[in-house]
Image 1 (tube, one colour):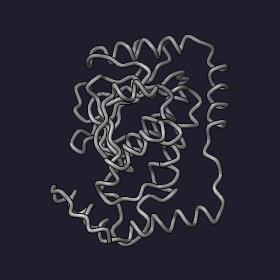
Image 2 (image 1 turned 60 degrees about the vertical axis):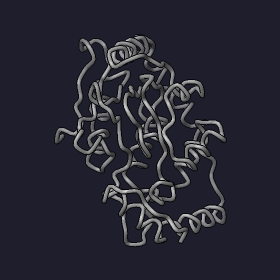
Image 3 (image 1 turned 90 degrees about the vertical axis):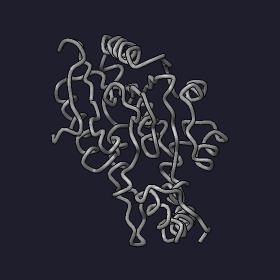
Length: 265
């Protein structure tokens, strides 16, 4: 690893709880291909080491848990910015099929694709001050169909619409009310204590039973298969967005640290 993600045991080796900590504060833990590769390597190392639970978190005290999919990785040449083979989609599939429960321990802001990462984790513990925002409409990015289906499967329809349409941060207390956040805690100290207590309790249960149930839940909650015609129609709508002037303006404004001016073309 190159230091973007650390891997360590929580407590003693007998705890069977592995903690993956995102440590790329300079880029606000944006989900670059490099960081995602290290997270995936951490999952592999945890599995090889016999882990029963994995925790994904940012450094204690982080103001941003993750800024989401790396804007630098978005193409500006008229190609689809979020293909089914993009690094984030690949990691989320790997995470869904991990043989052990994965807990997201969240403090700070969670932006864009990082919301999907949190939703992919099996359990969520969050500080009350944490916020969640789905931001593609701020950039002119047409979110991919798999990602939209994932969000719809986790949140009430009107809540998902507000997240995508307004693109404003939503407080962790709301996500707790909607059943996404399992445990809501007061501060960073409580975050660690509550997360590791929950992880240890799970690690003490029968791992083969948990592995089987998680696999069943993953299979039963996979998105339904779209017809070819419907997929093509959705792709055309997304293509109209990613080839637009608004897409170029959104990415350019983000990189120039200013508010974008969208014209609908």
